[in-house]
Amino acid sequence: MDEIEKFFKCPYCFEKISMLLDVSTEQMQSYIEDCEVCCNPIQISYSAEPGKVKGFVANKAQ
Image (cartoon, rainbow, N blue to C red; front, side, top):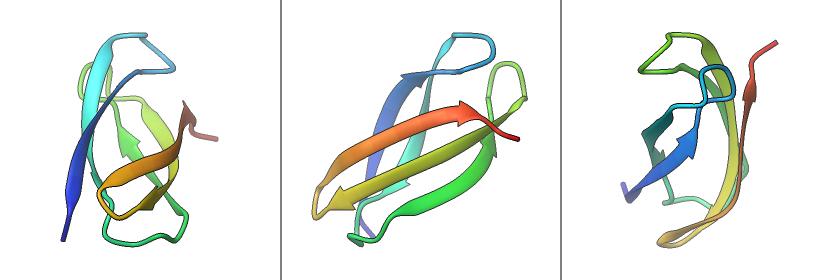
């Protein structure tokens, strides 16, 4: 499995955090993961192509 570390700001606390994203598939990925700083749930959505992230969105989970 190919993974890339993606850095972004938490939509709740605005701290810079990172997550490992699976870039081994070109399908749209979407899941919820807690912020490592404030522990609030973040909705992660992204698409990838081999070796890189094409589109990435991190929003407050509903």
